Length: 341
Ligand code: WQD
Image (cartoon, rainbow, N blue to C red; front, side):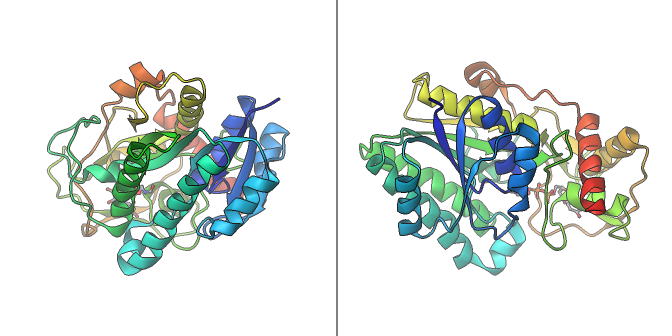
């Protein structure tokens, strides 16, 4: 009998890649997604890759009855991976209540139902955003949590606190918090990837659209930072490597290998890359030029952040394997797939 896992936001970018890895690790997956930032065709892409069609429920996790019905109709769910959240930093400044309601009520509903349906563990999709602008890099899990610089980042900080308080109250559940750095790339099959609706906010989807001629050119938001080439530095982590970490985290909880009721891991490569270095990596990997120009800084951007992944490597037993040029080739193949369909 396969262990059943609920993936909220499972038709989203990281969610869909995680569903693929869960299925390939032998898990039975149920997806719930309200399709506010993805589309149902992603389920076809997942099935095309794994040969297994995951159960898919179109629904909103902010509605408790919808979720309770799902648990009743899909009995035996043992774990949850919670991706369902709004995640655009800029939009969160414009629409804070949407972000607080969506991201926090979703989590509270899931936590409420876990004991009711004997669900053991929840993997929570957190973010390096909780660290703000680090005092030093690379950054490990002991780094101080700084005041959030956006409602989006604040929802991640508050969510981590909600989980800790709920577990501390004696709730019969456990959790692993995964703090992502910058997820990039696409599945090597080019059948699933990042599907930004409208103008991409994140660097790589904008970069591949510029390379494809969908956007006239990429604007590099500032080259006057205190970094070697003046552009911001980030830790770009391949989305498939990231997805694999979720399976390992879920297995760790279900197999009782976790050593604390709430564990935290930074998920990054440990390598910082500047925006200009990433553009060069893409051009070397694909032979395709990225039309770009230098523009003004973007408000709210931090200058540099990259992970110290030692704890995830040694305790979780996970390591980012992908080479950035392979990742850029996968991103480009996905862009070409999307452009054609
Ligand atoms: C990366 C770098 C930009 C676009 C955010 C969230 C994080 C996570 C990922 C959700 C920065 C530069 C970007 C462009 C550019 N969100 N850039 N031109 O801001 O590091 O992280 O998205 O999970 O929580 O904080 O990612 O891809 O927007 O930017 O020069 O058109 O690329 O200035 O230095 P960011 P990003």
